[in-house]
Length: 123
Image 1 (spheres, rainbow, N blue to C red):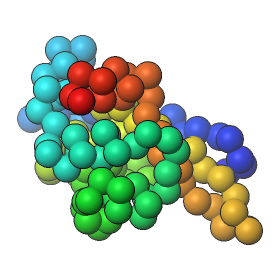
Image 2 (tube, rainbow, N blue to C red; image 1 turned 90 degrees about the vertical axis):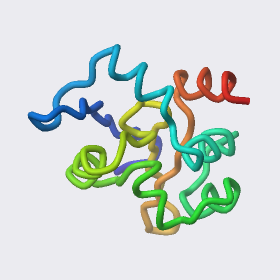
Image 3 (cartoon, rainbow, N blue to C red; image 1 turned 180 degrees about the vertical axis):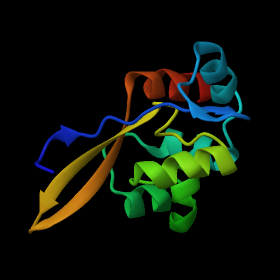
Image 4 (cartoon, rainbow, N blue to C red; image 1 turned 90 degrees about the horizontal axis):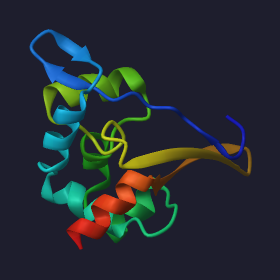
């Protein structure tokens, strides 16, 4: 992806019938049930960061970020949302921007407007 392009990521509804569009009621309920590492991650994201720096800043294990933040692979993200809980990407609390750094594509994470509002409520 080129610099400055933000991936559009779908919201999910965790129903018995499989993933579907998340309703406003479900989204509101999910937001009130953030896991402690998700709260730490959301509060630690003051400016765009890559996953490694962000996990370190939030004192969260980088490997666990796939569940808490969300996988960059939409299929894995959907499966994890169903298996575990909605991730920050699916809740639209954070966004992902891909940048080219010396020929390597690096993902940078930042809060969305909803994420900024949520962080303000949590702090």
